[in-house]
Amino acid sequence: MSPQFVDFDADGRLDIVAGTFDGSPRLVRGTDKGWGQLEQILDREGNRIVLNRFWNLDTKTWDTTKRHDAKGHEGEGHLTSAIAFDLDGDGDLDLLLGDYCGGGIYVRRNEGTRQKPAFATTNERLLADGKPIDVAGTVATLRPVDWNRDGRMDLACSSMGDPYTGAGDGGGVVVYLDTGEHAAAEFGAPITLLERSKKGAVEPTRPDSAIYMDFGDHDGDGDLDMIVGGYSFLTPKPVALTDAQQRRAAELEAAIAALELKLDALSKSIEDAVKDLDEQAAEKKREQLFEAKSAEFRALGKQQQALQDELEPLAPGTKRESYVWLYENRAAEAAAGRK
Image 1 (spheres, rainbow, N blue to C red):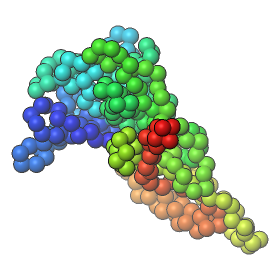
Image 2 (cartoon, rainbow, N blue to C red):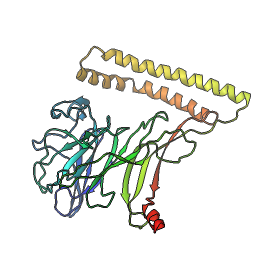
Image 3 (cartoon, one colour):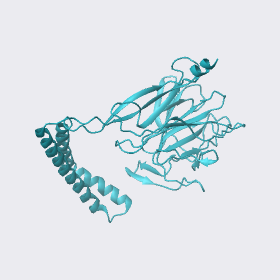
Image 4 (cartoon, one colour):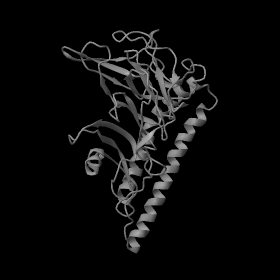
């Protein structure tokens, strides 16, 4: 998720570093013949780099662990974003890990070299302004960027918000400036580049959630602009209906609600069947039961979708659509206006 192009192993070729939803970072090396095979980024002992929650590739279930929590840096994280970043200024690349479930950013320090990374076996909370970073809306994207053009690399971070519903606050973008005086980064308090969304617009005016951003001088004026991709939640204005249309809309809403109850009951029957099992056995049994009842789930879902399609023109609901926005940095224009 949100790949970073970086020379990971100092061989003069760009590689790709990315977090994945399974909870551990991946690497694709650049070679003289093109891109190499996808590989896991491992720690110095050859183990997967994870926070706490991850997809167990052996058991094919979601799993949790505390074995990588350093003392004083405990968390409940799900790693989905990762970048290579020379945090301590020693010339090699460390790993910064973003938490999808919470707002924490964690560090795996490189205890090897620039050419042969060897990452620590424990996660360390990243600090800003002397406190552990806690990104409001949870972490979506991490980006190294010299935002204020002072020669020190800053850290930009976007947030997820709620990516599934039109309710609640959405995501935004902040940047942590490196305010230190030594080689190691020392981040200050976050500066807001894009406020968190309140959602609820009738048109796609801005990204609302699942925000992924990057930076570049789009207009060639010497400062950094921001490109942002994400979901926009649209809440159309109500439609004026005839009496007959109102009755039909009410019938459709009742039928959809009834199908929702059937789906809930079907899910509950599965959870009731596994409630007395341990976590690993429950996950395995749950997958088996979902597979056995998949046809029933699909049939109910198909009925519900058909009713929803008929209802939509009568009672437009919240829509989620994907867009890309350009945010121009007007600092150069403002500076020119003051001269």
